Structures are given as C-alpha cells and as structure tokens.
Length: 178
Image (tube, rainbow, N blue to C red; front, side, top):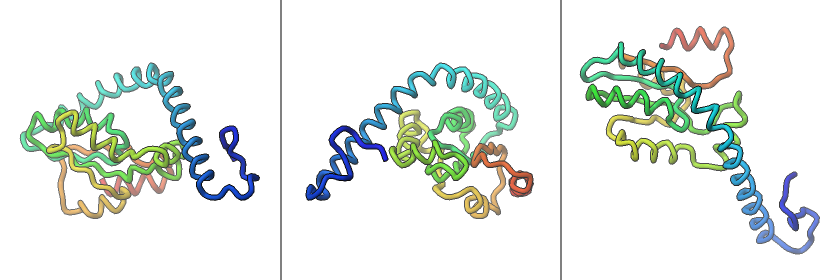
C-alpha cells in the first residue's frame, strides 16, 4: 500500500472524501515520478527509435504503392505509427492500427501506465497533431479480434509489434494469421 503523508487507511470516521483526496494525491505523485523517470529514458529511447525509424522507413518504402493499405498490430502511443503513416499518406493510402491501448498481461508496466493515462486519447491526439487523422484508422480491440474482422482484407504492408509474450505456438498463430 502506497499513500502520501497523512493518508492512512487507519483513519477512522473520515469517510470517502479523504480516501478520494488520498487517491488523487497518490495519482499525482505517481504521474510526477513517471514524468521524471521518462525524461531520463528519452536519450536511450531516441537512439533506439532512430535506428528503428531507418529500418521501418526502408521496409515500408519498398512496399509502397499508390493507394497502399497497411496494417499495424500494436500501436500504443504511435511512435511506429508516425513512421508508417508518413509513407502511407504520401502514397494516398490507409493505415489500420489494431490495439487495445490498455497494455497486455505480459507488459505490466504498460498496464500500469494505461491505468494512469488515457493512452488511446494520447495516440489520437498524436495522429491529429501530425496530420494523419484521415490516414490512420485505429481499431480498439485485441489483435486476434481485429485480424478476424479484417480477414477478407489484403494489405501491402503489415507491421506486427503487439503483445510481447512470445511462445512458439503464439508466433505460429501470428505467422498463420499474417
């Protein structure tokens, strides 16, 4: 149990108001801690993303055709989506993004962040600010449901970066569904 100073479960007769205030204070402290930590991670993430960006641009560039249709499975905040959307938009195409925007059982840190922040709203705002709201079409659902819904569709490019709990059977299922 984590509680800011003065917020103790043992306080009697205070009622729900103090509980709500304590929850809001704890949430604010956690958000503040997350933002502080995230500043330190940006250098490492920037290096990884710049390498990933080069590879993704090359791959999607090779698949690019006018009116292309692309699919991203696992979008989270949209870092990879931005890379894909740039090339898809330049080719007057469409990018479908399947994600729950709630994390997954294998990534507790993402689930934790999704409880504190509205990840999907952050993703949508990122697409809007970047000018991709008419290129990127998010599908809020688990990947197996999304893939079944798009079963009759064909895509020029598919990028899978979803649930990171890899099993041999899971990898075979994803390979079969792709």
